[in-house]
Length: 244
Image (cartoon, rainbow, N blue to C red; front, side, top):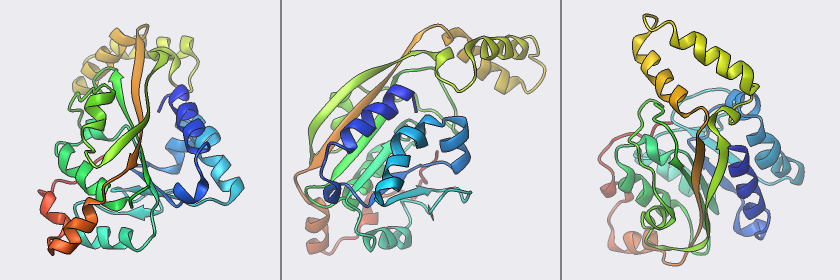
């Protein structure tokens, strides 16, 4: 997550009525180290204010780790049942959709979690190099393409944000990051596949990076329609896990 992305999300989230946002589910949250050490602006700008004000944010990921409140797979009906009992009002889905192969299915499942009048905050890279986690489908949508994945929602706000140069997007000083990248590039025999990834990054070091950010409000409750029809939510899922 870029610094400007975290600021945009925080401004949007805290401009809304708290009882329409919290409890919030942070899907593909990664671990505490990532949010507080590797990209400390995530916690400082986005989540620390929620702690101070006593709002509930549930960090969910498919990998069990420190700082993950809820471990599970969105394609698991038991996990979905657990989520349905948590009174989730909104979902944060940040930089996840480019890492899944069943994007449309995942978006339908996410939609089913949110009640009518609830929100989803979605961000996906718009201009950014290939980055595996563990895959990258190179999904780089604009605002309309991103919102089209959630047909039961209306766009409240959307913007393509600049994150500056790639070399400025980490918590490492740009000079040190560039030096580390140079050293990595002169050692192609060490983990050659990772070396290829480093080469892609090196070509982007001094290019502008952008991210698509959108706030969506649910206007149609498709989950209620499904419930009344007697069909389970998991009819949408082909059992491919979400990954982050």
